[in-house]
Amino acid sequence: MLIRGSNGVGYKAYSDNLIGEFVEQAWENGVDVFRIFDSLNWMKSLGPCIEHVRTRTNGLAEGSICYTNDILNPENTKYNLKYYVNLAKEIENAGAHILGVKDMAGLLKPYAAYELISALKSELKIPIHLHTHDTSSIQSATYLKAIEAGVDVVDVALGGLSGLTSQPNFNSVVEMMKFQDRASSINIDSLNEYSNYWETVRDYYYPFESGLKAGSGEVFKHEIPGGQYSNLKPQAQALGLESRFHEITKMYGEVNTLFGDIVKVTPSSKVVGDMAQYLVSNNLTIQDVIERGDSISFPQSVVDLFKGELGQPVGGFPEALQKLILKDQKPYTDRPNAHIPPLDLDQEYKDFKKIFEHDLSRTIDYTDFLSYQLYPKVFTDAFNKHLKYDNLMNLPTKNFFYGMEIGEETIVELDKGKTLLITLDSIGKANEDGIVTVYFKVNGQGRSVEIKDTAIKVDKVENLKADKNDTNEIGAPLQGMLSTILVKKGEKVSKNQPLFIIEAMKMETTITANTDATVKKIVLKTGFMVNSEDLVVVLE
Image (cartoon, rainbow, N blue to C red; front, side, top):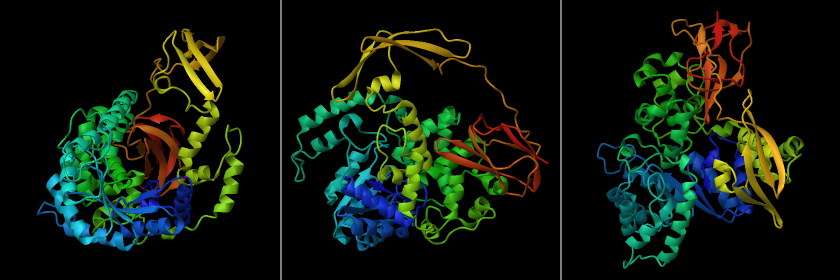
């Protein structure tokens, strides 16, 4: 299991007893190895989680360093070889059973890998496990040099699922090491069979691909992690920025420099991505941030990062930028978890069951409760979807994503001995509200259901736009859902007071008042989808 130190599997700090309980329950439910890391390489986040694994489970604690920059660059004095070796020693001294090296953007070049692994092997007593992403398409060479230097474990992906923002090709690495001292005994023919199977399965998921058609050397400029690169494109689509995707990747690198060149792994990488998309969406430059930052409503994730909610980066945050972003808020200088009181897990579990233990086809259990504590909104949304649609796991993947063709039959196994044969007969014409009647058979019996056809175009509603020259008109800074309005008509507000929140693809932006004023009018309602610059609140 990947676990983000004191951030658990989430995007913020949690109480220490919640993280400890989560680790213990993960072990009880079958997790053997915990790959523990911190998105800023902060030992005050890594250490407590390593301790949880050692004291509350019989699992293996793989304490990890996150690689960034280039140790062979003589101008790199921040993340150099000495930095990584010293950090690795701290992790070993904290009790880690294995050292993980997480190269999430695939920045570890072959010759740098040889230097790094050689140095770590000479200084540490514990095994070393290397993980990388093949965005640049040279990471198999990185593995070759790491193997020559004595690395103990490398992460790979089956051929049909490998390359680009995934891991290097398992099948090819095995072939690469044939007839060498460290040759693998894995059967290459079996690997190729598995690869062929998953290559076919992968076709079903093509809409979620990164969009890369070949390796890209640009990764050494923008340093976007492989997993995040795959998510950026749908996020850009949701924000109406798909045609400006390369502007976003370029801005990502510029934002990283603005932030002081931080380690970029989830969740810190998400913050850099949020800021990049926010700036592109609002046609803002880095210079605009420096000159006008006191009047900009930054994404909430950016505010949280600079407040210290995710810990402290190497060398600290740029102080002038931190003041611009936080405005009147004071940052943490210690562990954010120290400011979170322990959860009363027994009482919270009782309260949780009162809310959720009903109308479900299975019993709510303690692992559901822990999931809710880490991701309350995501869990609630999933719970409500389950209530509405029941368990969709048994649907064939093709039909789940792409529906059925007229006359097509599909088999759905609900349980042992309980199988449905579903045939799609016809689809009626849509009425004026976009509702269609779908006719089908279930085990030979005719059925019909009325559904909303989302493919039918409806008249586009144009919202009023905020006047850029009128500081009293407060508009949406980006496309998304108006999730929360925090003020009422007639309410007096002070400068930097939150007015409303826009949500889009895990990015939450709180828009604040730019001066002391009174709320004259609230133009839109909660739940509305808004475009950039749509008028939301009028002040006076």
